Each structure stands twice: as structure tokens, then as C-alpha cells.
Image 1: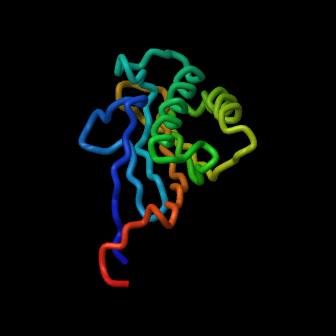
Image 2: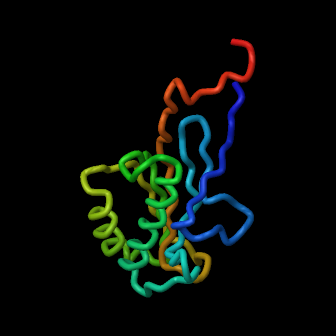
Length: 142
């Protein structure tokens, strides 16, 4: 089986700060790169507290998911990287408010350092929308 990898991007989320895509759609999944708490217009971290950084990250995640036709409710796995696990309760309260009743699988790690001295970075994997039969192009023999 051949996989088609489709880069996904949104102008409403920060541009990639390196040689990577904001997200890749593959086999009905969206794999989002780790999102930093960057303001997409200023391309810098504005919030200095964990709660504000998590809110900005989730806004960025929403924008990239939307570009791929998905929402937070389609997220199946979340990985959270934190500079200090002592801030876990603060991160968790914002996370719970943003995700609501939807509870995807999640892992959280403390790391030595994050890009741009962020306090938090979050990456997600989500289900991608299944294309309608009319949207599928058959390009070879069946």
C-alpha cells in the first residue's frame, strides 16, 4: 500500500521555524509538529506564564487542525513537553478547559530546554476527515 503524505499548513498558526511542516496528513491521520506558544503574527512568545502559553499553543493547534479539516475532538494522542513539571497543575487546568469532555490519550514529559525558552510545547495526532467518494480520484487500475 502506498501512502500519500500531504503537508498541511495554516496562516493562522506560526510558520515553522525550521525545515519541517506544521502538519502532515497520512493514512487518515494528521500528525502535527510540536506547537510552541508563538503568536502567529509577531512570531514570538508573548505570554510569560504557563496558562497563557498553553492557551496560545491550543489556539495554534486548532488553526492547524482546521486547515486539515479536523477539530480538537478528532485528537487521539497528545504529547506535552514542559520545562518544569511543577507547573503541571496549571497546564492541566487550561488543557481540561480547552478539551472539555474529550479526553485523548496523553503523555507529559519534563525536558531540559524547549525552543525559544518556551515553558511548554504540545504535539498532537488527530483523525483526518475521510474524503467523500466524489472527492477520491482513481489514478490507476482498480
